[in-house]
Image (cartoon, rainbow, N blue to C red; front, side, top):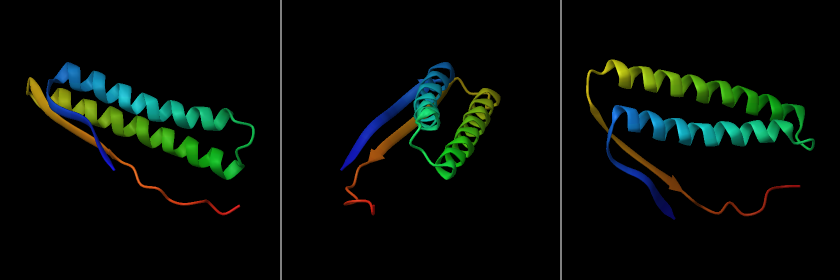
Length: 89
Protein backbone atom coordinates (compact mmCIF):
# COMPACT_ATOMS: atom_id res chain seq x y z
CA UNK A 1 0.00 0.00 0.00
CA UNK A 2 1.32 3.43 -0.90
CA UNK A 3 0.27 6.56 0.98
CA UNK A 4 0.83 9.98 -0.60
CA UNK A 5 1.95 12.12 2.32
CA UNK A 6 3.05 15.38 0.69
CA UNK A 7 2.42 16.61 -2.81
CA UNK A 8 2.47 20.21 -3.94
CA UNK A 9 4.27 23.47 -4.46
CA UNK A 10 5.28 25.34 -1.33
CA UNK A 11 7.12 28.51 -0.44
CA UNK A 12 10.66 27.91 0.71
CA UNK A 13 9.59 28.74 4.28
CA UNK A 14 6.67 26.28 4.10
CA UNK A 15 8.95 23.59 2.65
CA UNK A 16 11.44 24.14 5.47
CA UNK A 17 8.63 23.85 8.02
CA UNK A 18 7.26 20.64 6.48
CA UNK A 19 10.66 19.02 6.08
CA UNK A 20 11.66 19.95 9.62
CA UNK A 21 8.45 18.44 11.01
CA UNK A 22 8.88 15.20 9.05
CA UNK A 23 12.55 14.85 9.97
CA UNK A 24 11.84 15.79 13.62
CA UNK A 25 9.30 12.96 13.85
CA UNK A 26 11.86 10.42 12.62
CA UNK A 27 14.58 11.86 14.88
CA UNK A 28 12.22 11.69 17.86
CA UNK A 29 11.43 8.06 16.99
CA UNK A 30 15.11 7.17 17.21
CA UNK A 31 15.61 9.24 20.37
CA UNK A 32 12.76 7.34 22.03
CA UNK A 33 14.35 4.04 21.00
CA UNK A 34 17.58 5.11 22.73
CA UNK A 35 15.66 5.82 25.95
CA UNK A 36 14.01 2.38 25.88
CA UNK A 37 15.74 0.12 28.35
CA UNK A 38 15.11 -2.98 26.23
CA UNK A 39 17.26 -1.80 23.32
CA UNK A 40 20.62 -3.47 22.73
CA UNK A 41 23.86 -1.51 22.53
CA UNK A 42 23.90 -2.20 18.78
CA UNK A 43 20.38 -0.77 18.37
CA UNK A 44 21.31 2.31 20.39
CA UNK A 45 24.41 2.94 18.28
CA UNK A 46 22.35 2.53 15.10
CA UNK A 47 19.78 5.05 16.35
CA UNK A 48 22.48 7.54 17.36
CA UNK A 49 24.10 7.25 13.93
CA UNK A 50 20.76 7.59 12.17
CA UNK A 51 19.89 10.73 14.18
CA UNK A 52 23.16 12.35 13.08
CA UNK A 53 22.50 11.39 9.44
CA UNK A 54 18.96 12.76 9.54
CA UNK A 55 20.07 16.04 11.14
CA UNK A 56 22.81 16.49 8.55
CA UNK A 57 20.46 15.72 5.65
CA UNK A 58 17.90 18.21 6.95
CA UNK A 59 20.54 20.94 7.41
CA UNK A 60 21.93 20.38 3.91
CA UNK A 61 18.48 20.32 2.32
CA UNK A 62 17.38 23.54 4.01
CA UNK A 63 20.67 25.22 3.08
CA UNK A 64 20.19 24.24 -0.58
CA UNK A 65 16.61 25.51 -0.55
CA UNK A 66 17.68 28.83 0.96
CA UNK A 67 20.55 29.21 -1.53
CA UNK A 68 18.43 28.25 -4.55
CA UNK A 69 17.29 31.82 -5.17
CA UNK A 70 13.77 30.51 -5.74
CA UNK A 71 10.61 31.52 -3.87
CA UNK A 72 8.85 28.15 -4.20
CA UNK A 73 9.72 24.49 -4.41
CA UNK A 74 7.88 21.28 -5.18
CA UNK A 75 7.70 18.59 -2.52
CA UNK A 76 6.50 15.04 -2.94
CA UNK A 77 6.68 12.31 -0.31
CA UNK A 78 5.05 8.94 0.01
CA UNK A 79 5.17 6.05 2.41
CA UNK A 80 5.15 2.50 1.15
CA UNK A 81 3.67 -0.02 3.59
CA UNK A 82 4.32 -3.73 3.14
CA UNK A 83 3.97 -6.55 5.61
CA UNK A 84 7.16 -8.36 6.49
CA UNK A 85 5.82 -11.37 8.33
CA UNK A 86 7.24 -12.24 11.70
CA UNK A 87 10.72 -11.33 12.86
CA UNK A 88 12.92 -14.16 14.11
CA UNK A 89 13.02 -14.44 17.88
